Amino acid sequence: MKNRLIYKYIGKVLIAFSILMLFPILVSLIYKEPIKPFLLPLSISLIFGMLLNSIKVDNMSLYAKDGFIIVALSWIIISILGALPFLFINLSFFDAFFESVSGFTTSGATIFKDVEVLSHSFLFWRSFTHFIGGMGVITFVIAIIPLSRNDKSMHVLKAEMPGPTVAKLVPSIKKTLFFLYLIYISLTVLEMILLMIGGLSFFDSLLISISTAGTGGFASLNTSLASLSLFCKYVVALFMFLFGVNFNIYFLIVIMKDIKSALKSEELRVYILLYVFTVGFILLNTYKLFTNFSEALSSAIFHVSSFMTSTGFSIGDVNIYPTQCRIIILFLMLVSACAGSTCGGFKISRLLIVIKKIKRDLLKVVHPHNVNVITFEGKKVEEEVVNNTCAFLFLYAFLIIIIMFLISFNGFSFEVTLNAVFTTFANVGLCFNISNFAMFSNFSKIVLSLGMLFGRLEIFPLIILFSNLRK
Image 1 (cartoon, rainbow, N blue to C red):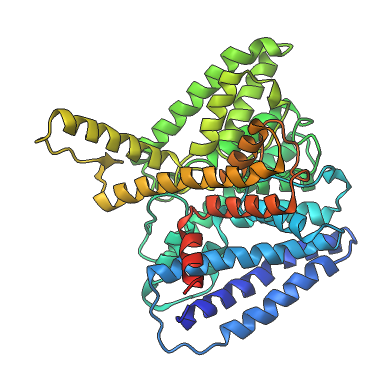
Image 2 (image 1 turned 90 degrees about the horizontal axis):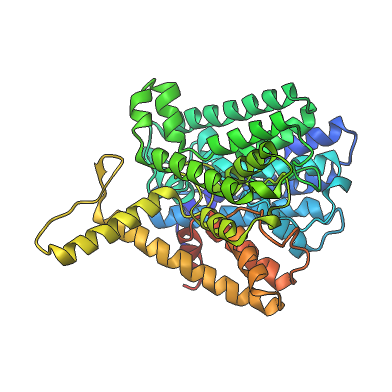
């Protein structure tokens, strides 16, 4: 890493992270709890951030490779710093790191057997990591701090934002991120208000809302959200679904007032159809397992929203679902929702591009002289994007197999191993037959943590970082 600008970027990330640490400290002060667990990472990130930010840089050029390295390094560093508070409640470093990575990657997989013993400040910190990771650490930094000249920070933004492409919605990156954060925070506040109307306290509404916004599954109760009223369950299900929508859609509707163009979105239509079909399929196959139809309907709607958006909240025992429903759910976990949302997974946009490529290749066998152009959202998809999507699919499947092989040495059943890898790599958190990940070895926790980072950063940043470390 010869480009000194990379270290300056990392410094700005650390400074921004130290600012974010003020929030759990504030919660600690409100509830008269110790601030030391959060003061330590704040101090470390601030000191090292200022040192790195003071580096003099002559060449302000930033390239795509540099963007990937900045993103990968930043996420690893903040995951380590985010783990430090958990060391104060006697967690091992491996458990603390797993919990921190799970939070920032919005996975929601936990090592805690009993979360109800945690203090307000730690419960808030766990959910707040979801809120930070949902939009991305780097996007927050770019939104508040100028990083490089000539809008070169787009290279960094592309490396962090989920989906095949990232484009500026308005000419300035800062204005783009301002509008996105405005939508992000507005939806979060709206959910919080509705939950309070439904009878929840301010604190519980806040935790659930910021976790939902990041589509993460950390909750303040061991039973997740099972104790919520039916109204609150439907509110959370609705907002899980909404946060699975590409934020460009909200930009078109709210900022541009162009509802017609938003509703023409191919990815949005597939997302809605896939959601409705899955809810109907699961309801048809599970309604006899519940005491009444209303309970079965709420369970189907809630859990499909949770799995499909990689959120991970639960309102009941999903282990009762029959095999055919579990297969559908595993598919949803891997595919997830829309690009440009806060969700993990492969993304519907990529799936559509791959399907269209397969269709084109099959037609070419029958009609070799025909020229078929792949389109998405009414626009031509460049061959480079198609090839990158196929390469991503191969790496996605290959890494899942590698991680499953490494985790298999724990000696658990094939189903437990499969569920553990799928739910962490797809950043879901909720899965079958696993209530927490404390039972896994330290080696497996590190492997699964890397899997969560690979899944959230969509593979390429970490691969590029590791390949450059070897040089």
